Image 1 (cartoon, helix red, strand yellow):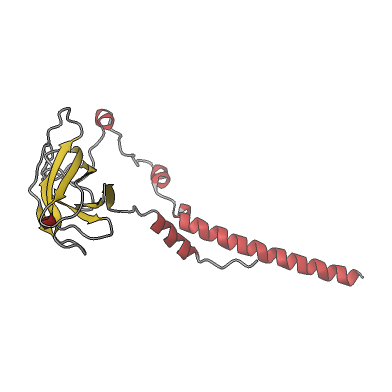
Image 2 (cartoon, rainbow, N blue to C red; image 1 turned 60 degrees about the vertical axis):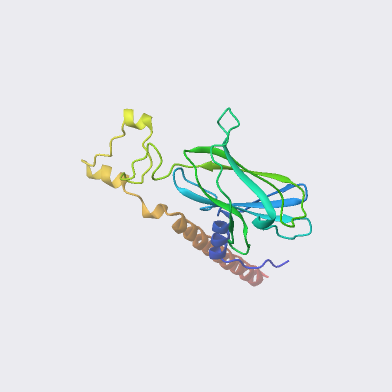
Length: 224
């Protein structure tokens, strides 16, 4: 069976696409109501920075539930807190993000870094025909530029581990030219170049083998 020829570039592109993280909205069902959560920016909120959360509600059959038909409440809890007291109770407003219309949403500012649980509860009003529901969503809030303990004027580089601060690693001293040559990256060690060398070497080996077999057949034919 003949296998289709696949370009190495296509393989590299496919591998890079498979390595990309997949960002997806979380959908949860409560009774006859399904809710799809979304948290901007990119489901990665930062402490002390405004974030927008919205929930696309649909009832059984696929009909959307606008905020006008839902007496909804949004409460946000810090999962590390022992008491069941919400740290935030933002006021919901009707939003129309993406392809949705007038769905419940809010702008929230998480006070500090940590894990939070968002809970949306609702019951029908103004002609709504769905059953009361409760939906939840958990997110992890990272440090922001204006969060406590962060210097907004500092360079956005990673903090040095305490072990390295106590025992700093000295940079290489190139007093000897041989040391500099040893520390300089060898361009021949490039993965792409190594792959090309292997490919060319394999092709040359195949050609040499074909020539050898052809000459051997000619020698056998002459001996007969």
